[in-house]
Image (cartoon, rainbow, N blue to C red):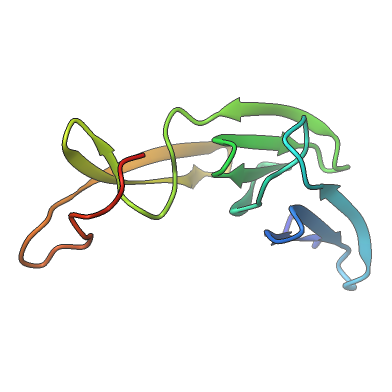
Length: 129
């Protein structure tokens, strides 16, 4: 993600951090770290900007964490469902779920039903979540 000032935010899932670089490419900050506490991640699955606020998705902790432009923790929000890439199963029906930015100041959660059989996008053996 790149903000209006040209700062570059990159996610690094294996290190559980978001690195911040200035417009020249020099690293200026590290956000997060391994853990389950406030501002920490088990993994960073996705990042983006809502206005000047950075959000980071951690699918393993079922939460989105918001940071100020300076990298300060603003808040964390529990995601009501698993947003993994595998289908999520509810009452015998499978759904592929996600989060996306719908405009500069808002995020949206989505759930698309996955059908099995001819033209299926998922295996019926997908484990329940």
